[in-house]
Length: 206
Image (cartoon, rainbow, N blue to C red):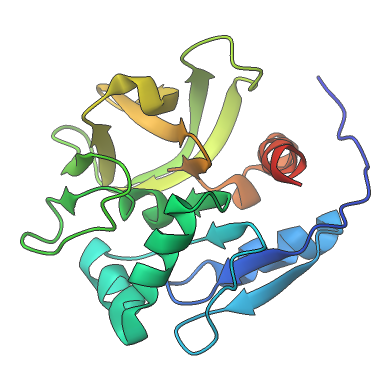
């Protein structure tokens, strides 16, 4: 097993507060890792010079409605399209897409073409540990991570899929395209392996 590499991170990150309930777990993990960050939201938007982390727990529609206050969603879209590094977690991945079966008629951020579908088999939500594997030799590790999800993203192009997992069917567990990376699972709740994934992204964009 690879060991965590202790490296000093000097880049400051913007952690979005407007997208649901796992802000505490993400912020505690970043603090433990020695990653400097500031909290941003509808009333204090990111300025564009810092990488953005969008965590999220809850429903697609509720999260999008929260992001739309003061047109914060458009601020995120503009920054991402201008090249600002972005990491989405859980619902923070799902809102990158055009739409979700969870909230018919509610538009997502539209940064990645595709939609979000509900699992058709098995108990939902999927809660617990599941195995993820990168779709190609991308330098990302395979391993077990922690999921809490009833829905999964289906990108129009499979080229953006970083990780796949299986829950009665193969599904997209993470995406990466350009400056955008997002995990359907919770790296901050996935032990040492999840922390390594977070640190890899942080090192890549710092």
